[in-house]
Length: 428
Ligand SMILES: *Cc1c(COP(=O)(O)O)cnc(C)c1O
Image 1 (cartoon, protein in one colour):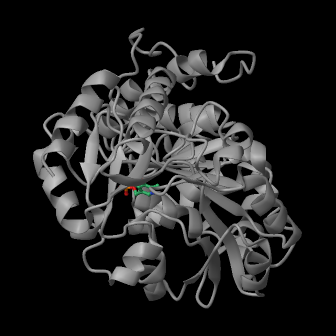
Image 2 (tube, rainbow, N blue to C red):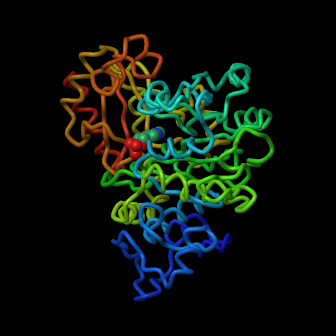
Image 3 (cartoon, rainbow, N blue to C red):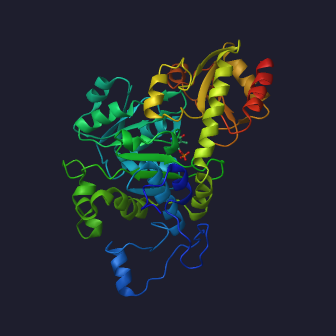
């Protein structure tokens, strides 16, 4: 099915990567709840371990249910291969792992998911890696931050949560000129709204926990490779271009061509880091992804209605949503995510911190949770929760000022979502 590029997005989200089960004819992709796979004989086992034949050995590396999901996501993103991981944060580490090394750095946008800022500013230091955070609207600053030790450029397509849209074409131009891969976190947009590879991304990463699964049931992540980067063009990517000692000196790029990153991600990344997605999680995400386009259409439609309504409410100081003409990034919607600016945005209350705390306590339909991309409408007050440890200046810089609330607009009736906010606003 994935060999049929003539199919449209709605068809591929249901079929790509899947076929009736060869053993039973089961139409739905079975959950292959197994850790190991019987070898035909010793030669078969040897060929699998030498990467001379593709097949299943052990579910830390590959599993048939997880493979269907990896191919589904890769197809929807327009990439050549995909790797599923245990979470979005695992996918980020797995994406960087073949590129980085001690003393190496990445240049990252300042506008990122809070957990990613922590991962990049603190935790990766323990591997000897570091990140430089730059305003990605300032292309000269991005160029200036790149040095001899830079190995990747990282940003989000639609940045969570401040309604910011990255000019992916411009950033890809900078990455290209520097001979570096561009990694785009496409979690908030999903491939339905934005296809970063068409704008020059080398790798796309996802938290499948969010919209791809869509119903708040399982955590997961994915990496999609465009297959377009020349890992051998410089000496910067020895893991992919030079002989790999753990595989008798095999050179991934020379051997697997455009699939080098995907094979390395499985054969070295999953094998040795073990950040594997389990088949149950893959099943839930496959169930969700079948309706991705339908849900995203409704998320966007509802977000536009709710954001417009909030913008004219007397207690609301501002709304940051790129889907509104008032947004400084509104013009980028048509070019980067023409089907809409997603379902996430922030709004600020004139009465500040205390009013925000009261509002999250007064909503009924909205759930007060630290998640996004659910079919349900969700709300959080970052300054009293996820961004609590930051100074006020850091909160403001992160788009999480004390007067700011973040919403993830669900697929319920827009009138009910608005009515809930209306009654809650009346109480603050
Ligand atoms: C949630 C999220 C992540 C992290 O994903 P997990 O599945 O929670 O590990 C990364 N980036 C973005 C944009 C996210 O929303």
